[in-house]
Length: 130
Image 1 (cartoon, one colour):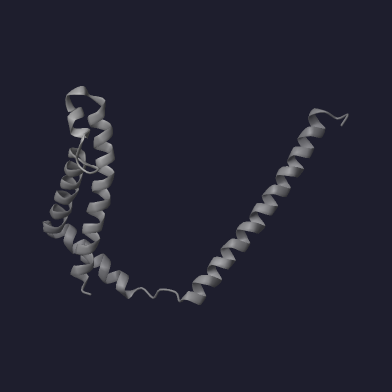
Image 2: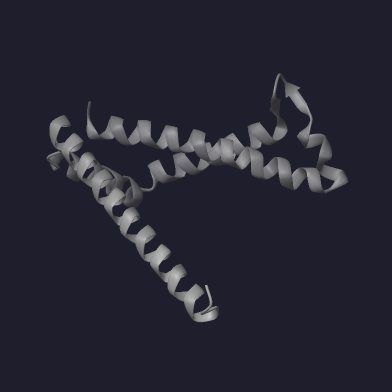
């Protein structure tokens, strides 16, 4: 797959996700005022005017990003650089994941120990008769 195709697929995916987010934002905004509430009623199944407006704005933004030479070139450069990255193998990823989990458990145990010790000391300071 070429770098151009990867950028195009990424822009389409980003536009769809942005459009779905904008749909919810527009539903909340349009539902606030009585004049714009008809825009929140379903048109077809669960699709409302807010759905089409949100996806339209996101699609227009993706097209704008693609036709602007500077942003397109930056996106193509990013894909080209990511192709040069040597990604870790599955065993390396598993080993790193296990190391992170073990370190997290040790840190949690130490913090828990310090918390119990600090609670004991503050209880003794506040009420020495315990």
